[in-house]
Amino acid sequence: MGEVRVGQGFDVHAFSDDPDRRMVLAGVEFDGPGLVGHSDADAVAHACIDALLGAAGLGDIGGRYPDTDERFAGADSMVLLADTVATVRAEGWEIGNVDCSVIAEAPRLAPKRDEMSERLEAVVGAPVRVTGRRAEGLGAIGRREGIACLVVALVQRP
Image (cartoon, rainbow, N blue to C red; front, side, top):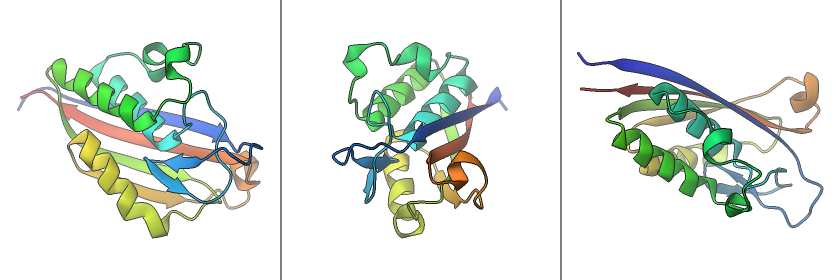
């Protein structure tokens, strides 16, 4: 068996006061307020990027797609994820799987969870599981101030 590595990703975004800001998670649009961010603020895609970069030893999202770079203003995070996947593969890694836990009081993920997984799988080229968790009213997430996402990714070299 070849080399196997695991990476962990995390992202958190506050809800926006801008009524025109779209809510996007894993490339899927949801009703409700959008999230504050330099790009589209897709916390799920961002955490996936960090997990994959970490597993492959290629830095992190802030180094690769800095929020100080105007090229990434309003960027589609699924495009950034596709770029990350291409980079990870170019370094000789195969992606084994990705597991995403989204922590939010709102929106409800269940009605769109399968679509989220399918969109991520289409970009990642490997199985992706998305689950929803609640903060049970605790902390900023529990007070419905934002959304967080934790991701674990497995990569391997043959």
